[in-house]
Length: 114
Length: 109
Image (cartoon, rainbow over all chains, first blue to last red; front, side):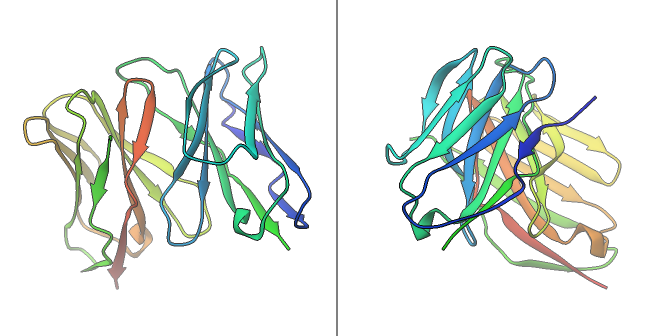
């Protein structure tokens, strides 16, 4: 059974540019969550999608957006990149049951903004 | 505000010893609890899940849950240098996961 796939694995962008990251969840998983992780910081929750609807959103500026497609694949977009956006971006997929659900992470996309 | 608290460490134990990692959470409605291991530069890897009060053992790992005290712990027996990593506690409340900031564990050969 394939795991969570994130593409690309590495990105280098210039300040002011925009970037789109992709996440393909485990087959059958309908929930996809996105997190930002920077050195010394915990996982900062960005947003969660379920059945193409954003159910939860973290405390990030509007430059961070996402969407989910009918096949549960999700994309995250960051516009007008800033140096502080350099981070490891992780997505996690789950079955989203109330009890007993487990979240599995992809390998992440490491974004460097120069 | 839903919070998950962990001692950031670092926690150092000698090889072969028991490592004890602790976590508290604020939302009494939480029903699912998880421990993830994250090696430097890698993504978190699920190592244990626990849903009811008591102990759950899986190999060298034992997760302990006390919902009355809102407390979750992870014991690693016979610690190995390969266990050196950051351990993240996670709680599922409603339809969202909440993560602690992690405890850094170093196992000294």
